[in-house]
Image 1 (cartoon, rainbow, N blue to C red):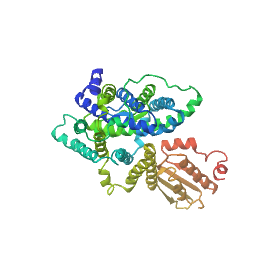
Image 2: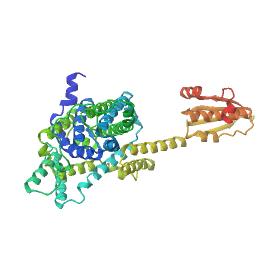
Image 3: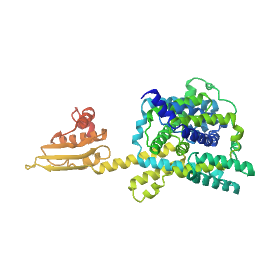
Length: 493
């Protein structure tokens, strides 16, 4: 593909839609970035600078066009203890190190790990994020004036009804403009963006963190950096998969991993904290018409413009307008069909989805929730595979030879069934173990074969292993010990 074709496809094929959607996202990023800064225990400017830098860098370096990356709650919560104990400069250093780790994981093609995350885990992840997005709005819904509820209701009405009139302008942008105008004209008593904290008025400055470059510093920041790198990549790659589905396009997960690393390094150098992809803002972007890298770039660049040139006006935006947008995102993100599917889908799949949701919502830890879902999926998969394993046998006419035929996958979950199916006390001259329809996967499977062979030999029978495929033969050649001197003593004791 030529440069001009790449430029048009990645940047210029949807200029109007990308520009408008980027503007909407920029406005939605402000309260989020300020809130995440508070979670991390730093000045609001740290989160805002991070959102600007990460969005701009990822628009060039990322592997998923139209996906929004910025400061996030998932990474902000990981910085709290580091900031309390060591200060802002160590947060910046940890952010840079996290970026370096992500680049390394990208070069190791970590994106391929996504294939091990099942559909049920993905659905649980999405539903949990939808619930967390809504829960994050509760402080703006509890103990507020009645006018606030009216404005939120009006905002939702605009968001859902305006597209029936025209889709030329994104309805979330109309919601922000109309509610801001109403709040100013009628002097409505409600919280505004300015109430969240002071907005920066200067450009971020390129500086290396003021920390000692020694092993002690590495010991301090490495645990946080590893956690930020892992959680950031997990949320980014899952969000990329979700945007893939929303837009019916593909993304480069390994490039996205490297891009996230570069963005975090840049954020740390410009005084920002670490971040990753944001499913809420990415959903806003796509639903508002964003499709290319331009939308992500506009989000970062317009956010910077808002902070530097229009900071006072941005501060006037009423929080109900942004709350209405995030409620819309929460409703649109939640997979409502999955609730109905609980009655029809296999119980194991439903349990995986529910376990993922409950873990994420209960702990607010996305990585832990996905880890639990993947673990349960793996256990169910291993159990299901083990259920299809069987061993049959036939005895020769003279009663001197028995042939065992093994069918299925021989691994840690089926090794006991393999051994329990054999009668080692039978008086035989010869035993054949036919592995033509079997596959040996792991050390446990190899050990089970060793035990069977050695037990039959100890009983005086000659043992033949027949029919192994190339992969099974290879793992047996490397790991099996039944033909080595003293194997009976070592294995059977």
